[in-house]
Image (tube, rainbow, N blue to C red):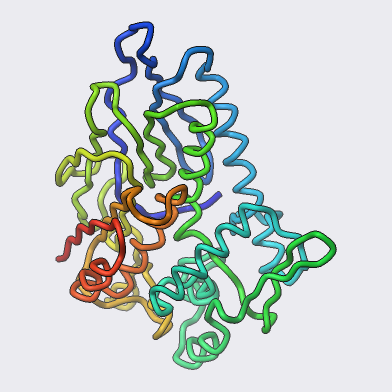
Length: 329
């Protein structure tokens, strides 16, 4: 499973559309995966049943869990982090390649190779450890996606790392990627109108059952907010995009009177200290990443939370198809 921290709520408001012969019937399909829930609303073409959609989504989510989950000790990712040499599947390769691209684009602000830092500060796959300047500095020596490369051997792809201590954590992209995979499966079934939500990461396309854009509620970033009963800041009407929120207001801890946010700056090896509470990225399909809208929005949202405020606005201005909503203290 992949535990995450986004603050987008899917507006699962309407189930069925009018039953005209040329109008798709809308269904809500849902399930459990990756340590949480997933939902989708889709207009199904004639001959496609909700059971087919659920089976396809469940199968994909299980594949992804077995590939890139750091909580599944038998996954490809966990085995590689433990030092094994394992042939990669398409899910791992896609998450790695997209992560590498955003790492380069963000000048290292988005960095899945900071996994040992996440572990050190208590936000990764292991428990909190004793943190010292020496521990942080020693880890920084082997953080960076340039420590990894893909290698083809015997018709299979392997991950090669130049230091055995290097590890990866795809938590900041994998749930968005999961949305994209389910969306692609819906497209193959002939669905043109859908909203897919996995762990509150979202990708939506076409029209809602109302006939207009999709309505998505944006959560108010209240420190320690109840995840089951959040406050709503505003409702957005959008379509043909991926939308993801990253925030520091829910996942943090306090120790010796000091607050430690879960967003780690890979350049310093320490939790960020700026006052940005949440960053919402809306990535339209006008961007060049069609097919990876939620994955890219997911990674971009983490990038924005790392650099904070004005730097995030400046960075977003350079990214095609990105709309950014920032909320600070």
